[in-house]
Image (cartoon, rainbow, N blue to C red; front, side):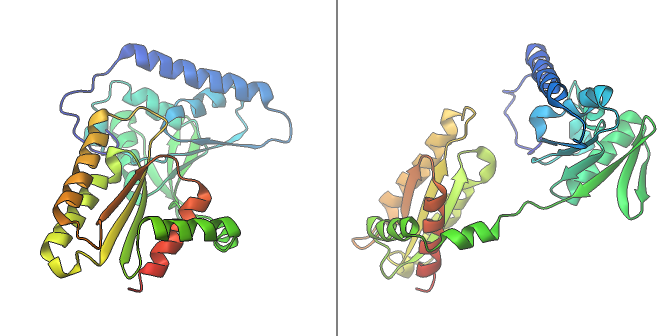
Length: 278
């Protein structure tokens, strides 16, 4: 729902799973309250797995500052209102002191759901988006996701990264080739299939470059179950592209599925940067 991906009618609303979701949130609440002590004035909660937790904590820790950041999109109110537990989830998140979203559109959709489903009033308080709920003011913040540049800078020249970069260059035979690199979770929302189709169209449109470009695609399986069809679809595209556009000098797509260490990630980035000059 949050990513607007059609499910072909496969998804159903399972009351038993909702009950489990509530139990999990309650267990987190009990663990946090049991460890809470004087001097702790803030609690940060992350993502859709714990949307009920802020309001559960608010009942026991009324004066604590509770932050909640959602790492997924928030759907439009028209789509969100189809969810049977729409009110409970809104009420749960509104136990927070501050709510974080990646994009302004997600915050706007959330506010729209609050207005339409809970009859709340959105305000602009000292330049910040806010909503009042049960006499409390909840602030909404838009914070884009980023990286830790210093960590990458520190590690890009270490011995292990140098070794991995050379090994990748040899394994993938990238000499005199322009390399595109990608590391994605094995998830339908990451657009891996669309990327492969775009690369295939590039190879079709520019035959003269088929021996000079390469896509190195690392795919990281997610901890949660991935539909078998997603993996098979990606591998089918990879195989078709390589069968159709390989040359004696080049296999256009190098595909690897499995865990990727931080040093391997930096090594691939370095390899792409070095080979981008060709």
